[in-house]
Amino acid sequence: MRIVYMGTPEIAAGVLREVIDLSKERDLEIVGVYTQPDKPVGRKQILTPSPVKVLALENGLDVYQPVRIKRPKPTEVLRSLQPDLILVTAFGQILSQEILDIPPLGCINMHASLLPEYRGAAPIQWSIVDGKQETGVTAMQMDAGIDTGDMILRERVAIEPEETADTLYDKLTLAGARVIREVLERLLRGEELLRTPQDPEKATYAAMIKKEDGCILWNSPAHRIDCQVRGFAGWPGTYSFLRSGEDREGAKCGILKVRLPRDVEDQGLETGCVYSKLLEGKHPRLVVQTGDGPLEITMLQPSCKKAMETEAYLRGTRELPSRFTDTAE
Image 1 (cartoon, rainbow, N blue to C red):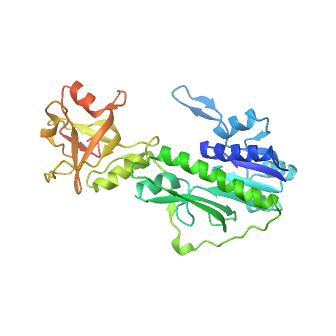
Image 2 (cartoon, rainbow, N blue to C red):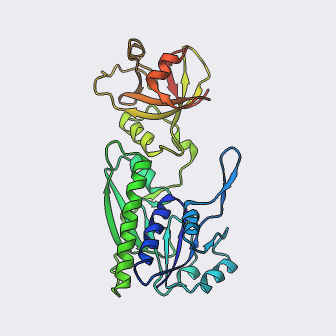
Image 3 (cartoon, rainbow, N blue to C red):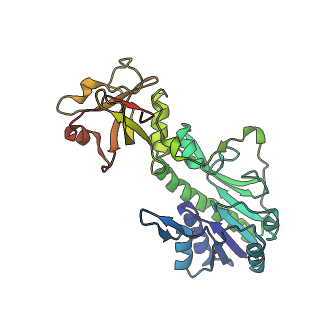
């Protein structure tokens, strides 16, 4: 079986690694790997290859990086590879119907959600932000829609109470690799893949994340803010604007870890205000009023400083915080 693989981030590299391992055991050949063009990263804007490209080159695979795969020339190059199947995991480009029709076995996508929930670009992050207790991965037969194709195989994955986007990402990578391996094993055995249509009435959409999504609105429930911090850990991160005393302008401050304090009584303060009495004593704590009670910040990153435990920050700052807001003004 001739396979073309398409993917870009770490989760796609994890699935590709499983396909490579299977190709060493079975009659399966990876005839090409497609990934997004190298992108500038960091302050020095150094061109950096995707995790999929790095893995593919390490294994001697041919790599293709078209800016727009739907254009005529890239499509013809893909056709010349004569794939029996195209596998896709978080590639980052939409495939045209012409491309979908190239392989006799079609195109199969590994999506990081239990479809039809969380179609779209950021299913892992939004499943945590929305407070879900379960998510998973779905192998689906691709069609012209965005994550609308028939489902082939799914695996459920629990979202733990302290799960972050990074830890869930790792769990879903392993689950996705298992699902794709099982799909390929069935095809190699000559089995027909059973397909289940998605129920469009149950569909939800995981929109592409913007930096502004990381801004904390303190009038939200404490649990919602906790989910937001864990769901957006890594990128875009969560932040607020810290004020001391009567300061009119707030300094941007990254909010890296929070917890729901079971030992703090709700004082009914205005949202965003700091529980000042807890700033004192041998072990100072930073607790902020939310829309439905207190929330403790346990790790933060003040403007122009490194990330630190909150207690270390409180011991080292000259001006103790008095409140947090969602704007600098």
